Length: 396
Image (cartoon, rainbow, N blue to C red; front, side, top):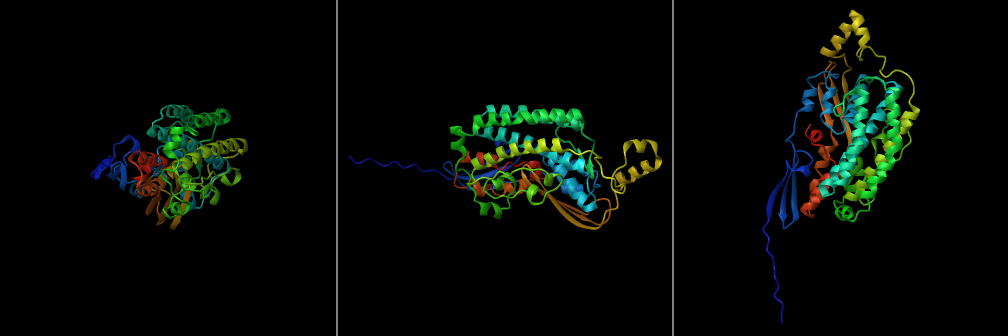
C-alpha cells in the first residue's frame, strides 16, 4: 500500500525578540523573520538606552567627564575608566607614575575577571543552567568587596585619575587580594567541571554561530569574540599600555570560531588575568600614585585646605579645566568585551571639542545577522550571549 505523504505548510512569521527580553542582555531588540523555527532574516535595533555620553563629554571638563565612562560599561567600569584616562594623558602629554601603572593593570584584570564571571553565569542561564549562575556571583561579590575596600564604590568606581589613581592601595587590600588570587584557580576548575564537558552545553554551543577568522576581521570584531576565531590580536600585547609590557601572560585563542570556542577563550582569559593580578602584587613598585604635573593634575587635598593658591588652582581646574595642547589623539585599550577606543579633538580649552568612543559592543551587535540567520530561534539566544554585549556601552 502506498504511503500518503504528509506535508506541513508553515507561514512566514515576523517576531520581535526584546527589547525587554531577559536574554537580550538589556534593551537590544532583534526583529526575526521566521520560517518555522528557522531564522530567515535577523535585524538588530539599538538605541533604546541612548544617553548621549559623547555629547555630554563635550560639555564637561576632562576631569568631570570621567564618571560618564562608568555608566557605559557598568559591568567593567574600571576598564572603561582606565581607557579614558590613558587617552586624556596622551592628549595632555603626561605619564602616570610606575606604581599607579601597576595598580591600574591590577584593577583592570580584576574587572576582566568580574566581567567574564558575570558573562559566564548569565550565558549559561540563558541556555538553561542555573547552578553556574549562582556559583559565578559568589566570586564576583568578592571582587566587588575588594573594589569597595579600595575606593568605597562597587560598580561605578571612578577610581583611576588623569595622571594616576585616586589613592594608594593598602597592605590589607593587597593581602586580601592575594588570598583571592591563590584560591580563584580552583573556582575556575569548579566552573569547568559543571560546564565544559556538559553534553547539553556542548549541544547548544559547538558548531553554533561560527564566524571564520577572515569574517571576524572584516566585521571589525575584537576581544574574545575575535580571538575565538583564531585571530591572535590583543591590545595589551599589540600596543601595551600601563604595566602590561612588564607582565608575562598568554593570549588564549580558539580554532573554529563557534560559541564553544568563545567560551573556552574567556575561561582561559580568567586564568591569565588571575596570573597578571598575582604578578602585579609581587612586582608592585614603591612611589607616588599621581604624576607631578601641577598644570594638569588636581592639587593634594591637604594643600587645598592649607594654602589659598592651591585652592584657587583647584577651583580653576574644576570649573574651566586645564589649558590643553591643540590637536587630536586616539588611544585604545583592551576591555573584557574588546578594543575600547577614545578619540579626542582639542581646541586648546579645558573641554574636548569632539569626543568619540569606539565601543566594541556596538560593533559586535552588528554581526548578529551573520551569526543568527539559518539557525533556530533558540540558537539566537546563545549567539547574543556569546558576543557579550553591554547596551550601556553600545548606546553610549
